[in-house]
Length: 489
Image 1 (tube, helix red, strand yellow):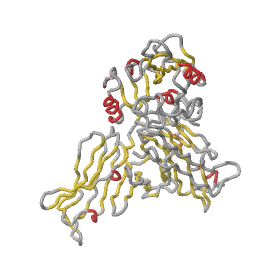
Image 2: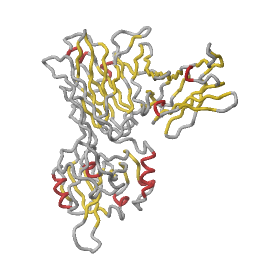
Image 3: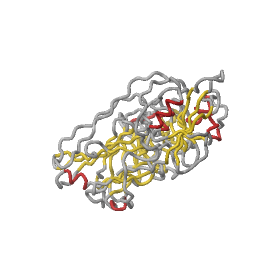
Image 4: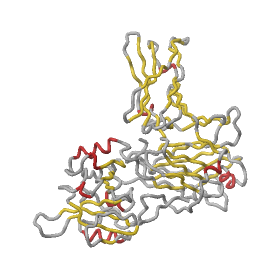
């Protein structure tokens, strides 16, 4: 995936021009997190110094700012903004190139990653055409194939890459290989080049940068309309697709009415160095100048936050659209249930919770040292929160979030109430204070979501699933009125 703990932070470039009416300078990059000691696999107690005992909770089901309920704005931008009809990937000598095509309009070059993960772009239900430089094939090769499968799982498919003819140097001439991705594809498209020699022996060229990140069919669209409104249509979720529909008239206003060229969206997940995705189509036959491209990106499974801004050239000036210099920021919701099977497998291997059976839970987020169970219950996914070990410490912490302790262990579900369940170990002597070990958040269906120390984020059916020698048992329930979902505007 594109995000890993410990990557350096980035600093966004300063603008070269701005209008006095609007501040359009992109915000500076986030400070990289300091080194942290390795925590125990699942115990929260005493494993990490508290970085925050009081913080305004960002809601788990929304984004960072409120939005008036308005009709869909995406239709207002059509036919000016177009999504891809297909994708192309080229394996060259010493480099990779990728582009998206829009039927009847043109094409746009796409960023190809940093070499540590998928370089290419793909979209469920849309074709990906792969071409290979003949120089990548050995002169002794008798056959070459593109081998692909959707990971995880997926059946391996081989497509011929050559027509049997050879060039002047004796190498096989290559032909395009077309991959028709299923409409329900989800995950990563794993691609490799396999050659077969005259002796029947095969050789395979593959590395992580040969893969393509699949933007699944399900996802959300963020619309940036010319009236300076921003609207999220659908649900932003890790692992899913996010489309960016941008009206270039926003940048034209910042350039004094000049039509911007080379419009680029700068997209960052979790504070990673931004991807610069062109939004300006290169017109093809029948295409109209000024047509804008709507990219479809896969949200990384590790993502909890998306930050973006836009820039464009206009008669020698550069303009930035960046929410008055703060950048547009959106909260990413957890992934689909068991989007990555390894999350569930990791929990089952731990054998720390005797009551937790495979059918009782799903994985909804990867392992992370950035946040723990208590942070999760507060809507925080970038800090480790631990106020102490006593119930009194947690009474004070949750009071800052508007929660009150219940007088009984009421684990029933009320859609109008948010509940946090706190676990603890009772002293073996039978007397003394309870030692708090864990916190879980109840969702609207009455299920519980738990971040297991540094291990994955899971959704489990009942509080008893985690009862055992590691966390003890539920010892207190905190409650507050359910907060409304929040979207960006």
